[in-house]
Image (cartoon, rainbow, N blue to C red; front, side, top):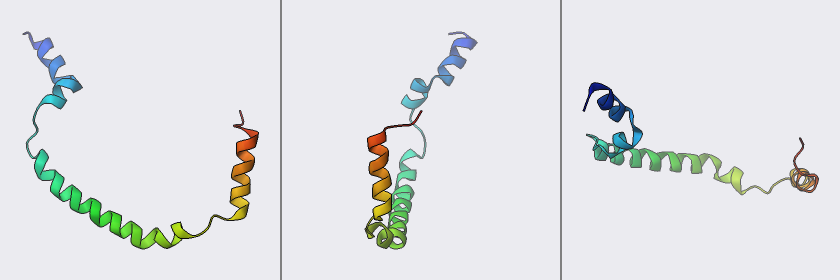
Length: 72
């Protein structure tokens, strides 16, 4: 294998994805903890807002847009 072939293999995403990465499994635990923290925080802040009814005016505009179709 020459130097150019070697560089192409290093740049190839398929080859890169197949290589094991050090620390890949260590990152999953903190990521999962962060995801859980973020989800709880977002729910605490926005659940009340998400449960509010959609205003009639907004529903009317959405329905009007559906019947008219996309504008070009």
